[in-house]
Structure formats: C-alpha cells, structure tokens
Image 1 (tube, helix red, strand yellow):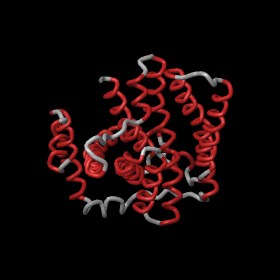
Image 2: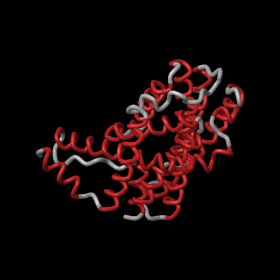
Image 3: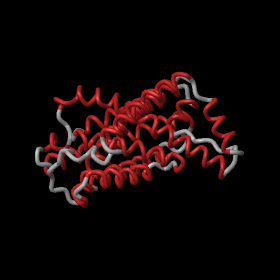
Image 4: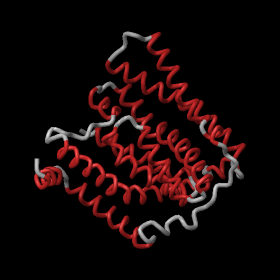
Length: 282
C-alpha cells in the first residue's frame, strides 16, 4: 500500500467537526510554540515544588497499587472462576477502582509529610479548581492535534510495515463499551475511565514520579520527558505508545507550568471523556 493511498484513506475518514477542532487546536499550539521558542522558554519560571522525597518513598503508592490489583485479581480467580462476558468486565473495572484507594491514601499521606506545603505544595489547592478547569479546556484543544498526528503517523507506519490490514487497536475499555450494552458495565467504565484512572495516574506519574525526577534532574523538561516515556510504556498497548507519550508531555507540562495537579487531572479526564462518549455514541 503506497503512502499516498494511505494518507488519502485516512483523510477521507475525517469529518467537518474533526477538521474544525484540529484547525482551532493547531492555531492554539502554533501560538504557544511561537511565544515559547518552540517550548524552550515555556517552563523557565515553572514553580518549584519543595520536597524531601526519596525514591523508596515515592514508589510506595505504586507498590500498593500494583499489589492490590494483583491480590484482588487473584481473589477474583479463586472466588469467581466461572464468570465471563460483561460480568467479568464489570469485576475487572471494579478491581481498578478498589485498587486505587490504597494508592491514593498513601500518596496523600506522603505528600502531607514530604512536601513543604503539604497537599497544597503537592498540587491540590481548591482555590485554583475553576482556573485549572478552564485552562485544561484550552490545553486539550492544543493537545488533540498533536495526539492525532502521532496516531496518524503510527497508522501510516503500521500499514507500510505490516500491510493494509493494520488498524489502530482500541483500548480495552472502549472495546468493552461496544461489546457489552449492559448499563452496569458502561456505568463503571465511565466512572473508572473519567474519574478514577485520571486521578490515580496523575497523582502517581505526575505528582510522585515527575516530581522525583525533577528533584534529581533540577530541570522540568527532562523530568516531563522521562516521566512520559515511563507513562507510555506502562500501558500495555504498544501501537498507542507514541500518542500516549505526546499526551503525557502535555499533562506533564500542564503540571509544571501551573504547579497544580488539578490541571493535569482535568486534562486527562476530559481526554478520556471524549474517547468514552464518542465510543458510546457509535
């Protein structure tokens, strides 16, 4: 399959709304690039999050998260060995919700103890919620063209290397939404994808990991880039890694620029909501 044919096929699938959103997003992104010297000046005055985090402390919430998921999955296999279909999807998403609790609790306890201003110093100041939500809406507009560009490049590479049969695989939760119309499954996937996952992943990958990396590197951009590489690799879906990396860069930048985890959480949540509700609308 030739490159020209692949590009023609991809653009034939776009609709007018997609083109309007991408055009607006490109204008916002281009303005940001011009004002910041292609991003080089973007984080010069990024607020410093004073802390005394050590690696063994920062990774405790990750350990609780992984361990709880493993234990609950083991319990599911022992106590519910015969469930399948929508019930299995429901229980798996319920496990993700339950496993997030100890990770969130330990993260907040560590933040209170090891950040100079406690939870506020970590990035949770209720006074910035409205401001961060509005900023996240603008950020998502600039983020979408970059993420879509990486997805398009991945599809082009896949079709050139593997063949015309290559398609970008859907995330597991989006497949389940299409496969199971039961309201229980769809409700818990909406709750998990839009609330639980963005909140948990942001306090861990941005709040803990990125802060730790910045403390050791002394500069925000190396921390954002390295945390984004780890964030993308954490998701067991290699074709999505380039897009996840770019999206993580945007969330990491939002955190460093504002010093607020609310901003990156809102950005993550809005992005997931767009994916989930567009799938539900099919």
